[in-house]
Image 1 (cartoon, rainbow, N blue to C red):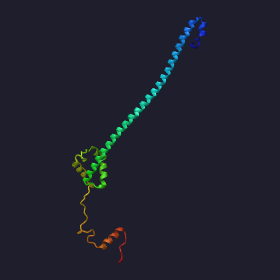
Image 2 (image 1 turned 120 degrees about the horizontal axis):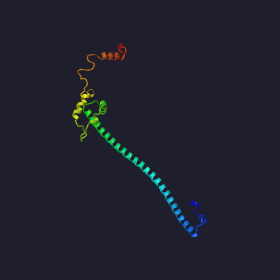
Image 3 (image 1 turned 90 degrees about the horizontal axis):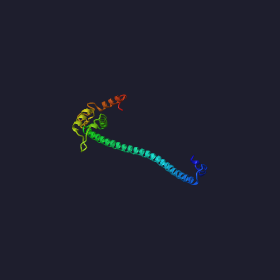
Image 4 (image 1 turned 135 degrees about the vertical axis):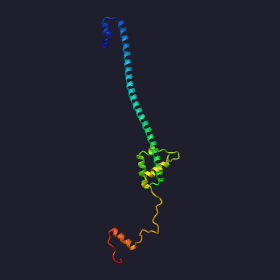
Amino acid sequence: MADNLTRKYLASLGLEQNVVDAIIEAHTGTVEALTTARTELEALRTENTQLKASATDAAAEKARADKAVKDLEDFKTLTAANEKRAKLEHAYRALAQSAKIDEKRLDTVVKWARTEGIIDGLKLKTDGTLEGADKLTEAITTEWADFVTDSNTRGSGPSTPPGGSKTEADDLAAVRAAMGLPPEQGGK
C-alpha cells in the first residue's frame, strides 16, 4: 500500500491539493527516517557479528595463552624436581663410592635406590651432602655387602709362588692337559 501512496492516488480520493501536499511531505519524511534507521540497523548487525567473532577469537587466544602459561609452570616444576633428583642421586652415588661399592655396580645401586623411592626421601644439606649420611652409609654397606670392594687386595707373596713345589715341566704338562693337548713327547 505504501507504494500506492502517490499524489495521483490521493487526488483520486477527492482530497484537496494542499492536503495531498501535506500527506506526501509527511510520508516522505517517514520513509527517509525508516531508510536511515534500516541502514543503521544493518551497520549495527554487521558490527555485532564482527564483535562476536572477535570475542570468540579473543576467548580462544586467552585459552591458548592460559594453556601456554600452565605448560610453562609445569615445565618449571618438572625441571626443578629433576634437578633436585639429580643432585640427590649424585650425593647418593658419592656416598655409595665412599662406602667402597664396586665402580661397576654403582649404577645398579643408584637405580635400585631410585626405584625403591629412597632417593626421593633424602634431604640435602647446604654443603651438598646428604642428611644422615652415617646411617645411609651403614645401610648401603649392609644391603650391598656383596658389591663392597676391598682396596687392600694384594698378590701372593714371594714365599708362596703359584706353582708351588712343581717344576716347570709339571706346570707345562698341566696346562697342555687343561687345553686338551697330548703330553709333550721327547726333548722337543
